[in-house]
Image (tube, rainbow, N blue to C red; front, side):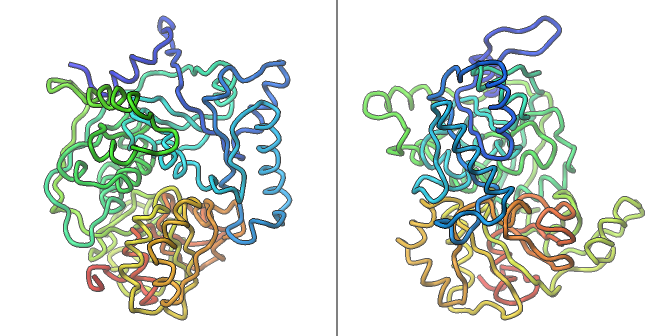
Length: 458
């Protein structure tokens, strides 16, 4: 009667404090440059070393520029954070994938593609979108800086066990509907707090038919409906993706691992604290209209006419009106990338729309691979030529315009169609306005210069 979450969680319990938290063993800690400096300073202050350094991997991504990465970072704050991570990793004997190395990129893209994130693991990082790794069949969640220090020192963390939720999506996705659209649909249905206190297992025909990249996108956005994390039971899609990757088990160890991974599923009679079911036929390409990921509509729909005053301020910020449609709205910027949609499948989707067309002259487009591996795949598949002929340039890997921590900032007042995960006020730059969308919808906007239903261009 156990859920998959129960099975993974229980296998990692070191001890439970009566009427208190659980001491949970952590298989993998990822560190990036923004949330780790104080954690390392805490170790120094207490004269501690990392308990299991081989389980910890460090990578700068938030502050890395997406051009001229072979040169010193111009912004002094960004440069200090990136340099500090490298120094800390060296001092504490940790694996560090530095900027401009072949292994660098966004940590939530690199972890799965290197086989560092595996089924059955517990995975943490000082970043909310750690939920991405749940697509591998792992329990993965973001933690705070003090908790990063806790894991560095002990490879354990104190946590209250979340409740369990299963979201089942039945049927077949329609033309032009992607994993990103599914996620935005769910966030709009549940709202940004609807899964607070829960760990979400995604299930159903739609989820089983998603590629690994699609699953990573879906799990990435779990946090945006308030969930502690989201994950998908591993299956042949998972195993085929992991096989032969650098850190994946090899030989007899591989066969043994897959044998165990096949047991990682919720029992048929498992009881969840909450169950929700949706139908794929109700999902069309999605866009957001407000200043949180839950304020979203189908691309052909109108902004809801709501009497809630809470909607009026976000709409005023965005420059939209209740009851109006967004189709045909002029777009200034398009961003393809982030840990949400910076993988090879996302670039294939974008290229499928722009092939044989030209970038709209009024649009500034930033196309940013999630890693150097993705960059190499783009070039091996000839997508760089397709994109170049359409007037697009591929930038160097990093978090880029997902958040305003590097040079890629959308100017105040400008409207950006973005494949990233958050559309908060100022998220992409002070005063910037963000519409979240899939790579297909972003590509359609990039070539037409206005918000366009991608199904019209497929």
